[in-house]
Length: 309
Image (tube, rainbow, N blue to C red; front, side):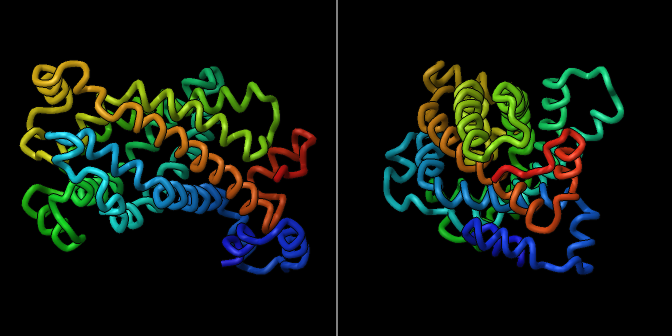
């Protein structure tokens, strides 16, 4: 598509393309649907980070699995399950960001007195609830392939027929909602502290890395619980809190924080790539067609009609 090509093109080419593209029905449709930018930018960001950092994710899963790293496959075949990750990354990230941006704007327009951090936390929580409908089935396939329980997507799908496609849904929400409620208010506050609107993508990436690492470390016990439930479906019937207490009783605090450093590094680098790619893609997709899209209108009203790339 035109947007994807302009994303890969050098700056002079993007500028020439932006000036030369006529205002055709496609451009008119794109600009009349501003949340498509969030949808497309979120999809690009999710695919980028999931493919680039997949080995770290695999190591984290194996460390958290019952029996530990060696029993789950060690450092062999670190791209096991990458097919499932590729299938799920675009819809999950796209659904999260379009819900997040829409919810933020809706809350802001309906409730004037809501503090910014509450607005961001509520929007992030809603985003995770929607994205989990796509995330949970692909996470089950990916993690079972990562630890060697199944070898192919076909085998993973057969296994899901027995255990269900949404085993661990509650545990996933119990991990993702607190993570996002921590990360995204900190992320938005970090961007606001730098006092630039729109913020250059590399600065947004650094803020995303810091907030991602902090949030990931704090929520590691919830991630361990989610991993165990997806790999051992019998735990799903007990609920997240019972599963956490079960892990703590057997392995102590150390068991709850298995893979915490790997997860923090993964989510830190992930935040760097994910949110940096998201902000850059959003600016490129917005600027590639017209400066009169939703962000362009906002910047013009503030006297900042120029997009910063």
